[in-house]
Length: 190
Image (cartoon, rainbow, N blue to C red):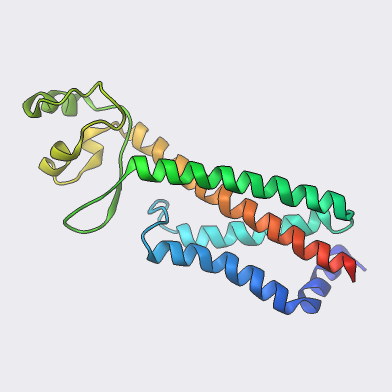
């Protein structure tokens, strides 16, 4: 029996467990998206998250299908620790570097490092652009119609977007790997 045959066997023997694990793993990004909690960049975040979930479950099967309970448990714990760290980082960076636009409710990413144009405009508002990150930006952001790319450097906004996306994908990938390890363990018990 090939490894792929074993994978299909697990899929057929544990449909309820698999449906629950894949369903809950796939449902969480959708719930987050509709609650306004998911990243808005990249545009296909939900689809990419689903892909990460699937790949993580496949990898857990590939690497753990012939391992003992201790090894599987150790991998689950490590994956859950990584997921927890990624989630806390995501919460922090999302709270600190995203801003809901009052007029539309859309989320915009902020940066860390003001552009030269924004520094010159900050004087008009009596704002010190060298204090804090992202700084006192609300009045300037409103004045320029919420174009974050004018206040912060494009590189800093790109870094924030990447940090948000990587922590999001790491969270779901690690969580899914742990769920996959659990499925593998249950399959090995039978």
